[in-house]
Image 1 (tube, rainbow, N blue to C red):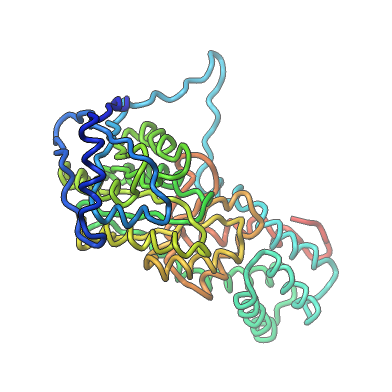
Image 2 (cartoon, rainbow, N blue to C red; image 1 turned 120 degrees about the horizontal axis):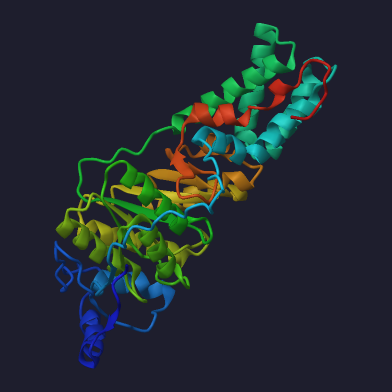
Length: 406
C-alpha cells in the first residue's frame, strides 16, 4: 500500500522557503536533494508550506524543486468476486461500448435522418433540414457546409434516391473529414517519455491519467504519475487512488508548486528507468490569462528537467462543451504547444459531431476518446470505428416508407 507521510523538522521548514527566494525566477532548478533509491521505495520527508497564490506558483517552481511525498506501488487489488451462484456480468467489447457510448449523438444524427425520411425523396429541402440536424450535433458550420456540399455532389452525380444511400454518402463524407485526426501516440526514443496533461476544470484530466496508466501498462510500459494538480481539493488523493488501482508509483506533495513536483517526478523516473511519466496539472480556463502563463512556465520547467521534454502535451476536452472545445484547443495550443487531444465523456452528450468541427478548424491529432467510467473505457481513436458506431444503427434502420426513428 502507499508509503506513510512524515513531517520535516522545524529547522528544514524554516530554511527551505528562504533558500527558494534567493534563486532567480528563471534559473534552472537543481536536482532534488532526496536521492531516489532504485530498490525498495523509502518514505520521503514532507514539507508543508502554505499554499502560494495560484498566479505565483509556477514562478516559485522555477526557482527550486520541492521535496516530494512518494506513494510506493500498491499491492495488487484483487478483483471483486461474484456472490455464490451469481454469474459474472459479461464484459462488452470496445466496439459494443463505443456504440453504446455514442447513443445520444447517434440519435441526434441518425434519428434526425430517420425523421427526415418516410415517403420523401431526396431534394434540396431535405438537404437543408439535414444541415440543421448536423448543426444540432455540433458538427460546426464549416464541417456541416462541407458535408452538405459533398452530399449534394454525390446526390446529383450518383443519383442517390434512398435513405440508405444518403446515409452511406454522409458516413463516407464524415469519415473523410475526421480520418486525418487518427494518429496513434507512439512511445519511443526517450526514457522516460514525458506526457504533460492539461485542460479546464472538470474536463476529466485526473481520471484520464489513471486510464492512460492502465493502457500503457497493457503495452508493457512502466509508468510513474506526477500529481501536479496541487490546488484542487483531493486531487492528490484522487491520483493516488488511481495509482493504487494500477499498482504504480505516484510522486506528490501536500501543497505547493506543480512544476516542482513534476520536476522531481522526472528525476525519480530517470533514476528508476521508468518508461512513461504522466504529469497532471491543475485545471484552468483559457480566459484566465495569468493561469495560462503559469502552465506555460510549468512546461518550461519540464524542459529544464529534460531538454527534449515534454514529449507529448495532451489537452483533455469534455465532449459536452461542443463548439467551446475549439476555443480551448486554440488557447492551450498558444500557451503550451498542444501535440494531441483526448476527448472524454462522449457517452454523456449528443454533441459528438464536434470532432468534425475540430478536424476542420484546429486539426490536432486525436490520441484517445472516452465513452465510459471504466478503467479501460479510454481507447485510441479510430475514425472508421467511430463513424460505424455513429451510424449503426441509424438511418440504415429506416427502410423506404418506414418513417421510424432509429
